[in-house]
Image 1 (cartoon, helix red, strand yellow):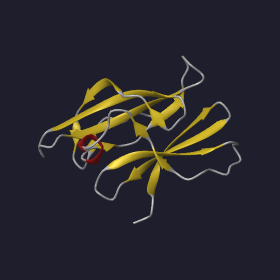
Image 2 (cartoon, helix red, strand yellow; image 1 turned 90 degrees about the vertical axis):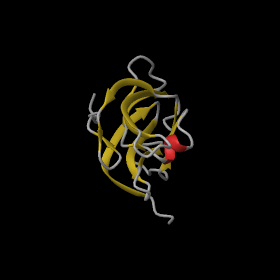
Image 3 (cartoon, helix red, strand yellow; image 1 turned 45 degrees about the vertical axis):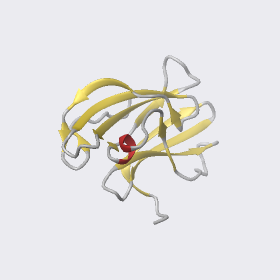
Length: 138
């Protein structure tokens, strides 16, 4: 408890003067989420990692499923926002009822994102994963 575990799934974006570093967070409950740390200067220091908030993902959507990682970049349509691509492995309250998809969401502050729009329905993989993951670098 009190330890924020992460691994090598990172994405970096710039929003105005702020550098944002996104990482996959292992929740310890077998699910994954996305977290972000921010710095006002590219030389740092980075602030603490905090969970990304995706509007509409509450209760079992967040606790039973996984947001496996996030690929986030400056939004080419609106430079005052960032856009993220997130693969979801959603599990309903029925244990064998799984849905996987890739969602697209926009944020004005880099931490709070709007409700993700489904851009692709994907196949679910074992262990709270989707077979289809976005690649960063776009």
